[in-house]
Length: 261
Image (cartoon, rainbow, N blue to C red; front, side):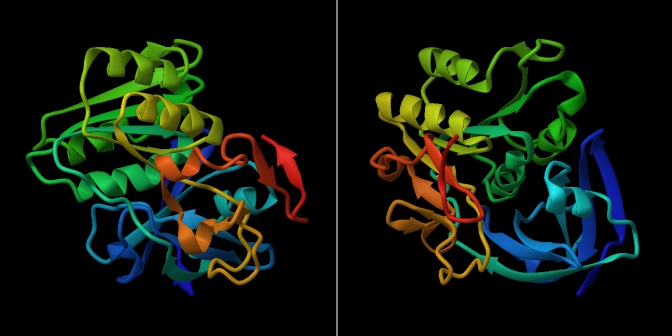
């Protein structure tokens, strides 16, 4: 069990919960943990970076029953953790484009901490409105030794560039060359990003989110076609994902039923 030591309000609907855990503080970018909220449920979470040695964090948006219960935890409350699980991003040399939406920024910020000073990094931060933009200052701080750009994108145009983050991906690919693209966030966003990358012959990896119950490849609840997100991912090559008739189209409910995204 871990004790919540500090809580940061990122936006009106997003909080970061910080706790001590030497193992989770050193996970690879893209790996996840299973988090037990006592009396509620266990859910998969990407592990957020912190500025303190031996500390780890989870960034959660209140949405469903489990995430809202986790959002409502207080300093001194307990959570259970197990992991890390899953594979990780393969960081290429050169110019990198990172495309994140919402809490999908979490594994991308950890990826940034694994970048070398010679990496040229462009990070897109997608959100619906200005009050939901977060991690912009932290991203700039983490990238202060790199040539970089951090570009907020809001759907309503209240901050940064206006439109969908994939619109900006398309603009950047028309004007620049990149050696690799990494993406995490809403699946429709990732689907469009992956297709744009492949049409431009750029290596792309996406961090896939699926319903998970065990996190270790036993229950099968996180399947996408023949793959299990927890065992075979959560990081997948774009060339593999575009062969799936479920990616960007369907996900499974808690009962295993396929539903249109």
